Amino acid sequence: MRRLLIALALAVIFFLLPLTVLTLRKGGTEEPGTGTEILFDEKEKLFDEETTVEVLDGDGVITMTLSEYLQGVLSAEMPALYPKEALKAQAIAARTNVMYKKKLREERPGSASHENADVCTNSAHCQAFASEERLREKWGADYEAYSALIREAVEESDGEIVTYKGNPISAIFHAVSSGKTESAEDVWGSAIPYLLAVDSPWDRENAKYETEVSLENEEFKDVFLAKYPEAVFPELPEGWIESVVRSASGGIREMTVAGVTLTGRNFRNLYGLRSANVTFSFEEGEIRMTVRGYGHGVGMSQYGARGMALEGKTAREIVTWYYTGTEVEKLTPPL
Ligand SMILES: [Zn+2]
Image (cartoon, rainbow, N blue to C red):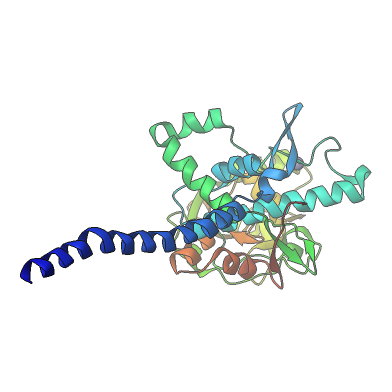
């Protein structure tokens, strides 16, 4: 009897148990079945890889995928070690600019600033772009790691663009604001409904938030006269800057220096200042200019995007914060 029990027990172990395992496994194999389909879905085409961009670089036009282009822009426009959501926000802004410019080129071919290309690699005109060769040089041993971070940010935001009333916007951005961004109207004179001044307190934490430029009185005068020979400088330097009109964010909209009226933007360019948010003090034979932020101050602040991301905000929250009244839409490739 005992032997019979043992035999039965063994039979259970040897025959029935494996059967159970087999059944379980079989149940399990159904999952991978559906899993394969999910995998197939995930492998659906990416918008950025199915879209091509014509990029003007110097005299030549290079055609590349949107994905390649965006990785080159991101690498040139934002430090690779910025938090993921900030990088994604930058990818969304850069992608939006491409779609905005493509649309403009299609609708009004003659009015496009470069007729044979969608974008150019001049950061002052379109967006900066770094080639793989340049990045290998710049990043050295970190090339693989950094380019993986950039690629992830582009892929994870695939097809996402910022729209205002259903149309891609001109997603202007800058490095560091004065603590509040500038409206397009205050900087360039024409109002754009989604480019308004918004708070960006994170920028005050930037190491170069405030910079100072001191010039000897004579030097200040010489630089100004070289560009505006009609200027007449009163004897006392305190009287040189006659009036300053500022935006609500503190940037100079317009000013009169030695009888010449110019925009804050032109003044900034003349003295090579980091922004047009300048205050003046006069002491011991020199003019001291205190400058806040870096860049024109319009649209998304890149350092602010970093700050928001560190506070746990998503890329979508970041772009819709800086571009007033906008939405994020996801474009998908044509079937
Ligand atoms: Zn351009």
